[in-house]
Image (cartoon, rainbow, N blue to C red; front, side):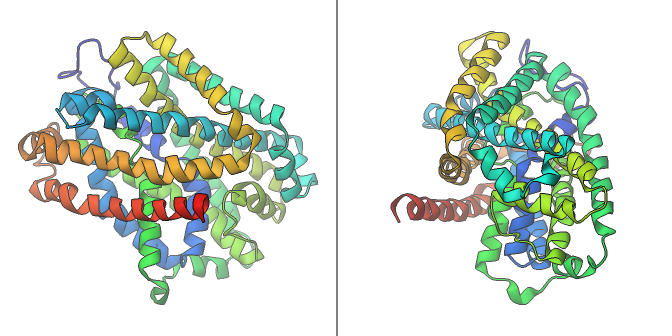
Length: 443
């Protein structure tokens, strides 16, 4: 990959493969393994899958391409990108996006720490000897354990980020993502070999369109944005590390396909088995830590498979946490000319301090995510679309998204789609998020 067109001294990904693995690594995370299975179960199984895949095509791919294009065009982090294109209020919008990711990364690191603790539990046998709900409550009550696990997550993230874009983010993603998918397929094959799983498979795969309603469509729309990491402008930051010869439509399609496959495979792991054993799939956050261990308790050699599950889940969540931290680090480096080493150490250290309330209260995590995740991140996605489609304009936007594409790339339809239609979807997500916020805080 050439580095033509990049800002002087700015890092770029070394290969298309490495960049694509990094993009998929941003998207694949807890949203695939925790949120997708219980959303699919709660909103109609196979009918939800159909709607979800359609929305990925109509909203996910165009929006990812838009964030990539804005990042590569400006060669900056979100704050710098909004200012560089002359977006009215761009500085304020950029600060809002960076603050959202900064806060969200703190409590997300705590949850990634939980996954690591469960990986250790599965290796030591604790997962098979304790009641899953009691074990989870014990973890939530153990502040030192949670704080130590969070510090480990942030410390490992700092090591990767200190190595930079190519030697750190790209290399870890390029090696780890294929391994993650192989392990995911191994686990899926084992679960699908369970006796009596056919009933659960029918629920998961066979659409019952009588269950379709506006609520299912809205839920699928929100899950697409959540799973693809749209709104956090991760893809703007990673897009700024792309050379001018990279095919952006191909990158967007690859990211969406990789993330969707991970979600579908995770659903195969959890939904059919849980439906077969009569387990609660709509338990929300405890799904991964209470329901999933019960599934592996029904499987011969379940302890080993549980270790594989929590190991791959940790890696997937870890890559997403790296992306969030990189948004903030890139802002400090670009806008304030802080050295990368100082930025990495400062951000990771501050995130550990910000994580203290989340370590002490799971309620803090749920309420924080409702506000910073479900509400503020869609606003970030809207800002990126406004910057590209309304401020940059049709000519420069199409030129950027087509640069490096072997054919014409995305055309005028894509531009008008991201200008008018995708923002309508964001308005729906935002309205639902605000409704939940008011119900939670003022209801």
